[in-house]
Length: 243
Ligand code: MG
Figure 1 (cartoon, protein in one colour):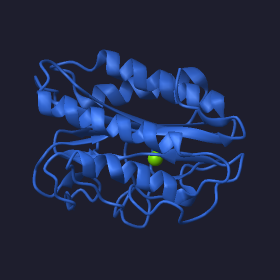
Figure 2 (tube, protein in one colour):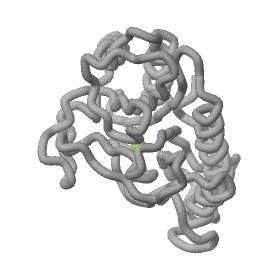
Figure 3 (cartoon, helix red, strand yellow):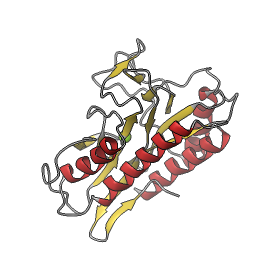
């Protein structure tokens, strides 16, 4: 699954490099499409239609800006100074899929946004550190939830991590909060995506736009979302979506 993960990491790095004030999120989607084409990979996002969505997803990336946390649809919206951008991207190569997300700011960052992104990244690292053979799903969930609560950020257990394999969303589900010691025992060889998303306002509720996709914080506060696909091995967790 590493080659698929490398495609994902490459595209996210290129989009992050190109994302600047005045660049549209549709232009970022085009960058991701060209990385897919150059690598002979396909998009598990394009035309994806899970049960909660009333239309197929129309792009290869999710671009969620400011109060949007997840599933933002790329558009002609041009990034503005100080925007907080979350990009989620997946790739399927030779029948295997990988999935990852990054959050960052463009232009002059707001200090509060940098703290929010830092907390999401620390939660992701804590979740990954808990992913050993013999530990349980709840250990990962509890590690993520503890970071959110310590920082007084809002979080929700809808739309968390998941197994990854031939398809993007497989069992088990890896919620962003839970109790240590509970849930499925993690076997060596399992590959999962871990993906904390936090809301700065501290409330745990979200709303979905009329487009049926874009998920925003319920209180209008900013949100951050980060994700890696990792393999659980006897040598410890291995990140498959890093360069
Ligand atoms: Mg995911």
